[in-house]
Image 1 (cartoon, rainbow, N blue to C red):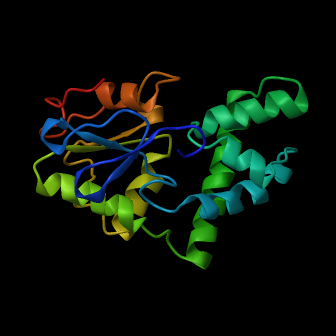
Image 2 (image 1 turned 180 degrees about the vertical axis):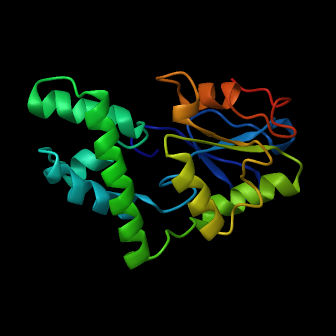
Length: 197
């Protein structure tokens, strides 16, 4: 048992947490998140938040930052503004904040280098493709960052706009979960035939 979860041994030494297991032959597709799952971007992103928040009268601790993981950036800015200033952020405030955050992120990336892929997750994605299982990337990240990071991590051959298997939260209905994003967004070869949910 791991933290109250049933830990099962599977064929070939695989393990799973919980009672659910899908045999490889039954997989219709694999859905991946980007930031902190496929690519180790989270430490890099924190730098830009820490720099930009004080310029706009906001603050964000590292714990706060990780607590916001998976949320679209405009939603994070609005939530922080509401919690810390007691009012709703204007669209102009959010736009100005995000413009400055993008600039700060690019500077941090130039200084610290591009984030690295997470090898064990990349191996899952490449292994699925080798077996003919479609893959999709659904992320709360900004497309311009996601595509640049995929390219620098050597993953643009399996996740890209040409294949249509990358969907970003800003491109689908507000509040969509990753599976909902995958149903609504990707139009890539083979992904539509994948039976999600």
